[in-house]
Length: 334
Image (tube, rainbow, N blue to C red; front, side):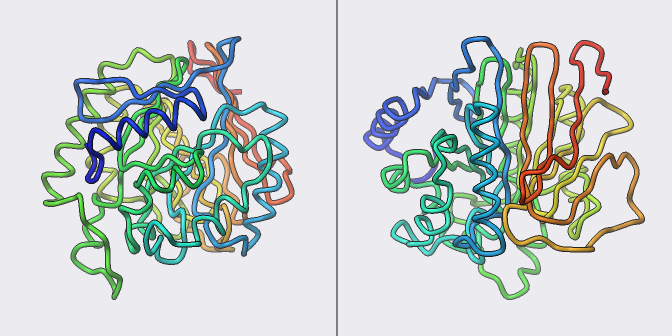
């Protein structure tokens, strides 16, 4: 269990989630906690993906939120995924930080967005009080909020594996560039990563879901400012390929991006444009597999059926910039 979650708090967590969203935490022999997320009655699933957003409405965060509400209603979304860097510049100061309300509750007010939000931590979140974002107190303030280091969402049609990628990045430990990171709950990064990889490999290998999706903050493949994360390329990517993961979704680079893999069906999808974007910051020498790149603000939608998936990227005005579909049985794209 994560630090600070005793039996009493876990019971409260269960009550909060079940009463608010019909969620249920189910036991699993692996270390990764698993949450059940019901799909629609027709068996389909739809959700939005947003990253790098919490700026109290600035840098078009409020405008992106408005369009998310509109698209969320149109698609009748089941939940929202946050790819991390939830609060800028340095996470939250604590459980009472008003930034939670000012950057989350007061921004994502549309009726369609009053669904469960599943969130991971980004590197900026670790620069503040990371434990605060994991606390049950925030769920009492806004019951939509669910942020853990690593966990699994079983959405019937799909299983979504959320991975805490920040501790993978060696430079955050060796060259913090003047920043202070909250490594409470991590301990030895080597042991932490080894255990996480072991648990992820087991969970992926046992998954019988039609669609396997992995979510992390850092990119595996990107032509944006940060580019590929070498630690994830060496440690995480082989596991995703071996277990036939369909999508890896991330933030970190403040852009919208879609890159295919030449050696497997996996698609790398970046949605890190929830507020401040980086215009013109592109690593043009790495364009292999690139299907789409946009250096402005926006978000992504995912629609899944038993045999097809549709991914769409939207700009700050809600315009569709890129739409991609794939057929599961044939792994062919249209």
